[in-house]
Image (cartoon, rainbow over all chains, first blue to last red; front, side, top):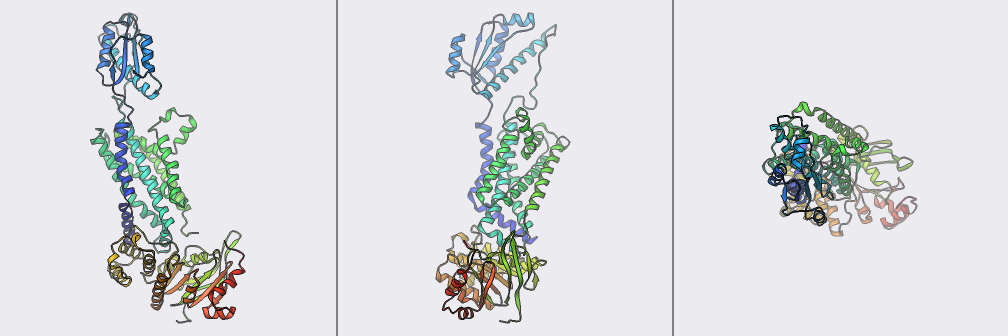
Length: 368
Length: 248
């Protein structure tokens, strides 16, 4: 045990003396939260739009007022006809146009059916989707208001509720994603590199010749990174609560327990890579290509998994980050307890166990 | 030197990798306090043989005991009783001199008090008082090598294995390094050393020369020279290694 502590102490020296490692360790979570939180947001604010109102009645005015009041849109003044609208789109002056037909209110009240044309600049599809979503939710809002006063409520209005994220904020999605990414990077890459580094410099041989058991060498390498990763979890959560104003709805304890599990998954992956590789560069490349890329692609954090072709959906199931992402989202945003995420937890445990056994088997106690 | 007391004893020790026989039935003894030179061209099987003796690699056939322990069954005890220094520089460059000493002493299970007195003593012996708190990476290579050697015998092993310890070191530092080796030997530590430098071979009590996985010559430098009718170890080595089929 004393030997173990000696070893862990040495690992901390390594980490704390390497400025670059430290910068990655503690700078990255902060940078990622700030970048995703404020720069890479898919929220659209003050998008320039025009309203072409051929109806000029009470209903169209109400809707226009609501749109103008929202912070998402910035209505450009001035009458527009079709031709000028098209030109404005081409020049990129406007992102969206709303066209009210003649007799809009009449149609709505008498035929219970009215149309509004919403034209969006879909050269940026994400942006266009977001904007049209905003518009339709505002229109629905108005419709619902109408129905409340209607004496004959036979009008069927599709009711869409934006669960958990009524303002369609981006933060709830990316905080769990950033957590998965950062933990992957720290636990997989750093652990793999630090073990392979000892192989490269020849100190691993010295350690293997010593009476200190090889399995302990590996374990004591993992301990400092477990500790550092937990600090990262804490810093990400604190940033999300205090900087992004996104509170943790569920239990902090459960969140930390699940994070610890995911970190252990990552550590076994890192150890697995370090056993299979001989140089730091290769270890880094495999960690980046083999771990980080799938995490970005298949965790559901950047691209929705449901929209992927079936084979890719199947592949996504073996990406541990996907399950962790679901778990964190459930706890943080929906406030779900363990009963809601035990399945995902079990899958993560399974993946961890698998790589642990594989690593142990391929780890040669005697250097051949 | 007591020829009655072998600390390394091998009998037909063999290592095969598939069809390739890296080490072929080597049999020799090394005695307590001896400096034993283990010579051979590149690819002759020196490193493989040494790894088997250190417990890093399991032999394919044959027997060996190290410090009285069996090479197959008692690797743990062997590890406790040997020191090892590899050809790659093997201390941590981002740790200070003192931290390196404490770490390696620590994983060999030395107690706090023992570690303190021993590291103090070692630093004084090497004259590193001013550098004790400096990072090892800042030291010149020669000092690093001397430090690495001293660290490898810190836990007072009965045998220390040195794998080309003086590679890339200037002649003056090499002499100083050998002074350390002699000192360790006079304290009863058996030194098992591989080298490419023939002048270093002359410093050894006995040497063996491996060619193509087998030991082709074994004896004191003087014996070998008269056997082969050569005036220098260079000549002896050249005569033997010329017949080698393997190599780079």
